[in-house]
Length: 539
Image (cartoon, rainbow, N blue to C red):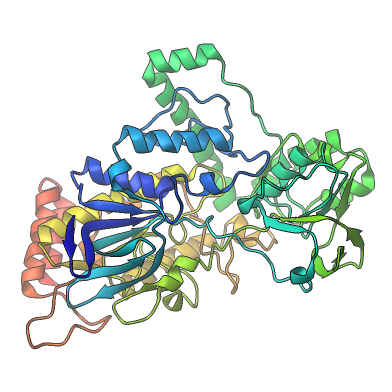
């Protein structure tokens, strides 16, 4: 880390301190890279598990799977842990792996631009300027709340907030409260606040498939066993992972096999909701799995309580304290809670990143997000996204995908080290297109594309740019190492010459020689990789 006239220079700048950012920081240290900072816009680590503090907030992935493989936690109190325990876990990760000296809080990245002359990124942050050889964007898709543009919202006289920005100073007890949306947050909020509010009105645009939440306290005996015999924690994690890997085929190749799961979900509803009219409103018309399957054993019982009204129509207008649904029904309320999700396919960070050709990442993605192996975008050298396009999951833990991408990051940095100072890797447009075409072809058979629903998995044009259409093992294999054939090597322009335009051939003879060395140094015993190295040298 060095001070320069343009700010502090680091080898790597990581943006965000949630699971992705902290995981990247740990991996950097384990790779021997200590010249890095983690730029965090808030005042503490945790990402979405810091921001989401709404009543009932918890994870719908089992605790022992929703944690890093390199940082097992034998002390999880429940099989599905709540937000406070997950946030505390991330704080411990920051302490255990010595990340505190690298953290820069209250340092929101307002703008970043690739400098092709000096071959580095220039970052403007709330705490001052930085420059970096490599940027790792780990802001996550569930970080910027989305509130729909409802006519009259700005004139509503009551309290309004999003589930990810919960106002704990506002007393809900005895109030008439409207909850907008029926996603993962809303089904946790509704049963948590239903007992204390005077009246709760839930505006449901589309019903969700809900399965029982098989949550329980982890016994003291289990925790003692995991502490004494760490391999039992690892075995538990592997078992949870294996079950979910076996489920992937039904989601990706044989959606018709999900019919049994639908019947189980309907049976779950019938146990708690005796009113046929209410059941009809709550029964989805699309294939289970098309939208995220939600887990709750308290949601349906809460909806059946006498102080809850379900409006099976989206909110269309607000007139004073009166909320008007699309079907014309109305409700008088004192407060509105939006459980309407996040900017997933239009991540705000993309508007702040300017690449080699002068375009923002948002402009590059105007026709849909696309990145090579979910990590790198053409025209944005030495810029990598953790939880990028088509890396999301519909049935398992995102920590598995994050760790796979960290493997890719580690090899990316190794390749740069061998290629030499001042180099950058920029994915070839053809490589990005080929990868994206393969992903989208596989997506055609999945339940997310064929299940008959509209979900946040899809962008404005109806393309699924969020979900990975395969197993986590497949993704891990695809991101095990960087294939230099998929990249162009950039070097600083020679004195008196103009920078290379984006998309032009940028691999000089010296670069190919170094690229060959990089391949050979890492994979000397691997015949296939030796052949790839020869192909790079001949490119």
